[in-house]
Image (cartoon, rainbow, N blue to C red; front, side, top):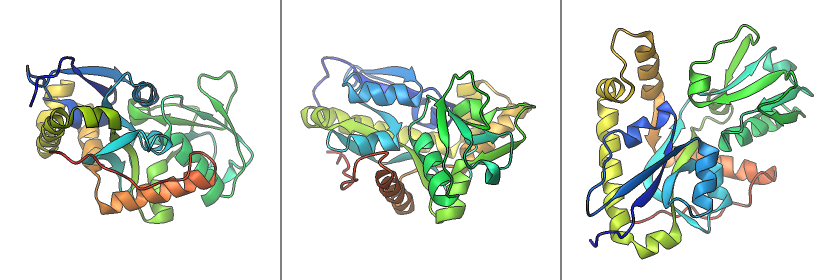
Amino acid sequence: MKTLKTKLRIGKISYINAIPFYHGLGDSEALPLEFYPAYPTKINEAVEKGELDLAPISSLAYLKNQKEYLLLPHLAIGSRDFSGSVLLISREKIENLNGKEIALTPQSLSSVALLKILLKNKFGFTNTFVKLPSTCRPAATLFIGDEALFFKSEEFFYKYDLSELWWNWTAKPFCFALWALRRKFAQSNPEEVSAFVCQLQRQTLSNLLDLEKLIQESLKLSFTEEAFTKVFGYLFNLNYHLDESMKEGLELFFQMASNMNLAPRPGKIEFFEPA
C-alpha cells in the first residue's frame, strides 16, 4: 500500500449514535486520516461537493447520488423498532395532525423524507412543512440526534418515534445512514480505502462489544449517572449492521421516496469491494 500524499477526508457525524464508528479510530503514516465533524445534512453536502472522500451519509443522500457513490459493506445506522432519536414531538395526537403545519429539522434528509412518507401513505394526511428555526407555532416538530434523545418540553405532550411507526407499518427495519464513498476516489485509491474499511469495521465491532467502556471513554459518563443508562439503552437498541433485512427496508424506503418524487428512481445498490 502506497502512502497517501494527503489525508483521507472522513465525515464525522456529531451525534452520540455515531460514536461506535469513531472511538479509537486513528491514523498512521501509511493511512493518514482527517475528520470533519458536522451534522448529517452538512456531511451529505460535503461528500457531494467532493470536499470529503467518504462518510456516513443520510440514506436518501446516497439514493440521490447513486451513480457517484459506492457503499462500504456491512455498515449502517438503523433500527428494527424504536430509534430513540428520530422523534415527532407534537402538541396533539398524531391522528389529529391532518392539515396541520409541521416543523422540520434542517439537520436531516432521510428522517424528513420518512416523516412525509408516513404522514401521506400510512395516515393519509396532507400537511404543510416549515424548516426550523421558524417563527410559527407548529402543531408538531421533527427532531433528530442528541436533541431528540434528551428532549424535554412542557409544551409538547405527545412523542412519536418514526422508526417505530415505520416498523409497525411495514415490519421492516429502517436505515437512516450509510457509509458512502466517492467512486472516483475508490478507483484511484483501492488499497488505502480497503485498509480504512478493515480498520473501521474492526473498531466498530470492538466498540459495540463493549458499550460500557465506549460510553465511559468517549462521553466521560460513569455508571452512576442517569445519562449513562439512557445512552447505553439507546446504543444497544440501534443496528449498525447492514444485513439483508436492513437492505429490504432500505429498498422499500427508496421506492416510496421515489414514488413521492422525494428522490430519483433507485438503481442497484453497489458496494465497494475491499482488496
